[in-house]
Length: 243
Image (cartoon, rainbow, N blue to C red; front, side):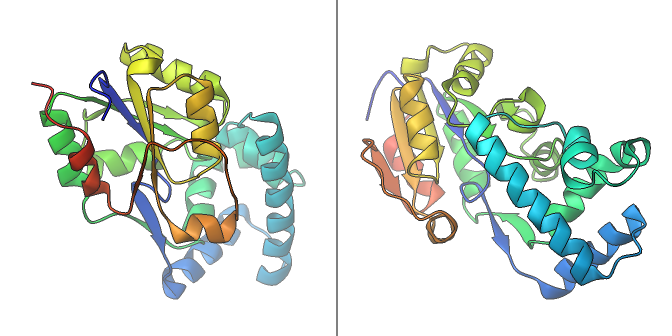
């Protein structure tokens, strides 16, 4: 344990929340998305094109380490064949439906009790997440009774930067008012999260082992990880009370 850690930043996807498949929920999301757009294509054709453009966008964004706003994502990258003046105002709803077509996102069972205890122990808590949505994470925080616990909430879709760009970590540390060396980060990606954290000079890196992350992005890393955990509640074994 680094006794100088004052702030703990956490990732969200596959760290604080996981995706559960629900065929009925996912099918409705796809139907609602098509209805909102007003497409005349079949579901198979529409989503094949959407998936192709999505993969191209993700590849480019990972290379540039830049994230588009929701409006630009949909009007420029994902639905360029539709009038921008129609698509841009729908961007927020489209993003939520696009994410819902993957499944239902739910917090891990031990998230709320753990983060509340960490805050009670005197740590400043924040979020740094690569995400295309601008509202989903804040809405989850509010609905789960965690309003005010995470400050700041740094979303790539809002700030235009993506991990592992160290600038997004420096931005977070400036906003929370703690030097990077006194910040810890908790994420699920052995390369992206660790690379950015260490480039930014954070004092500690913790990886939660998530099989779905490695299934989607098989990877190996020479970066030093301070702790591996399998449950969010294990953070309480790492961070004792500061007060």
